[in-house]
Image 1 (tube, rainbow, N blue to C red):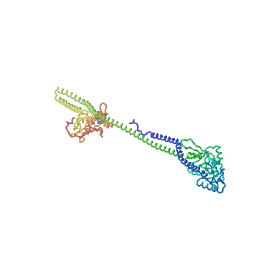
Image 2: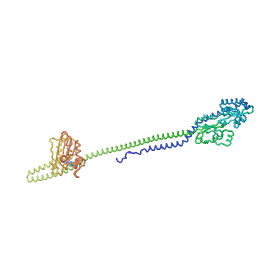
Image 3: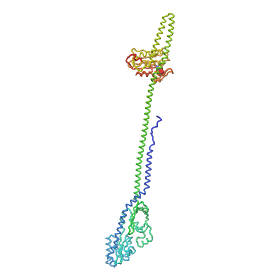
Image 4: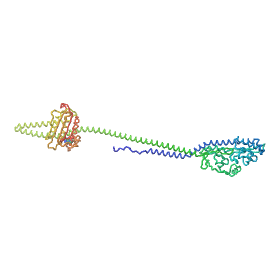
Length: 615
Ligand code: ADP
């Protein structure tokens, strides 16, 4: 048992779950790194989306602007056709026509929803104007320096945009010549105010700006950007602006706009623009006629913020999924481990049970074999014990026979002598003695024959008095000089058993008693025979009694305290089994007054035929 492996009470705990958790942690870190690495992509995605959202705003702003310009473009030619203008220009100092024309122009400007309409003479001086009533009246002002005047005077249609020198308002000017017959007598100018568009643009988060062909920001909802330049300006351009008084030159300063043009990821028409520390998604549309570029600048801030939020959410999700996966993997691994442990424990127990069962089976087999061997040995020993006893008795009997034979011989010789001398009485007496001795020897030989016969297994009613008498007879030689106290009961006592085997038991008990009292001067044996339900033969001696060891083992085969050659240690063992075979019991104890007391307790039997039970 001791060489068996101990049950695995402690096991290497949670190695697999820990590994699984590490795998998940590494995966989560990798996923986070991936998200971080792809953050610029996510940013661009959101920037593109923001740009796309503002594309419509740009389209609308451009269309409105273009529409307004197209609508206004035809007006000066229509107005120039009016006859009153030819009259006015023919008589510029006419007190009747001038105020009339002024009022007419004012009415027209109101109904056409344009800022100003005015008439210039061939010198570029304002003869009549719709704003004649206002503080900034153009009447009397000269606009000969404006390109629209020279263009109208030469080519027919003049167009120009500029900051109004008188009004301080940014406007678009369309001009047409007034023709009298084939002569150009003057010019009609229609001014469209552009400031108003900016107000609608201000509502959007995005910035809209309109730059002209010289890269000057002409319109923008960010007023601080007005007249800033988006690209360096050549000296000729600057000189031209100065000459035409298009913009106040002092306000022309670079905006510091930088555009990342080569960013294919941002999508078609979209660019990244930076002004100072501000960044925008930029997209541009063209208005061909004035050569304007309308640009919408969407701030990148919100888009980037959204990109980061998305990235963060994604990261959070990855971490959450990782955590859930780690927990689940951990749980699963622990479960598997526990199941494995339970299984191995179960199989270990099973193996142990099987092993133990095998051992028990082997043990049972061995016990059975031992028992069978024991039975066989016992049977052999019973016979061997009897043979041993026989041997002992033979020795005793040869002694018994030798002594009477010597006596017979001497009596016979004496008888012959007495007969020779004629003393027949003495001779007869000797012969009678010889006869007595012969009887005695015959009696001994009869017992011996009884004893030596192998007893059968049969049991039957046995009278106990003859059994004791026979035993005493057999032991007579050794009992000489021993005080045998045996008061036989009056009535015969019948018990179940075998006569010779019981006699063998009693002979053995008597022999042991004699051995025990070997050194006593006055040995005594008390024999008691009692009847009743449980007939009993008790043999008591006055020897030293049974030692502790003998009390415990006297009935064990080969237990003896006698010298080698004197005892085999089989007598009591055989007797015990014999009495047991009869359904009785042989017990040993020390008599309270000293000496050993052996009791043969038997089952009572109805009186039967002694011959039947004689074996
Ligand atoms: P054996 O007589 O050959 O020794 P037994 O089986 O008859 O074998 O006796 C076993 C032992 O029991 C004896 O050796 C002795 O020690 C003890 N014993 C038996 N009878 C007595 C007795 N009457 N008094 C003391 N000891 C006895």
